[in-house]
Image (cartoon, rainbow, N blue to C red; front, side, top):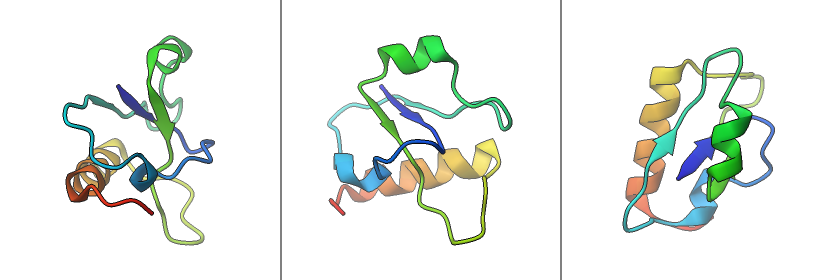
Length: 74
């Protein structure tokens, strides 16, 4: 289970390409719930351009899927 959080210091690409994965992207203003974060194997941040504070949930999911499908390490 991979959850996204803007506060995370772990880049999404650093976890490589898991064989099986479930990605959780949180509410656009509240993020992922503490309960889900507690059971996540990884809590990662999505790379964003400087000056961008957040992405909407659909864009976050698309970026996460793209980054994980590439499977490269940063």
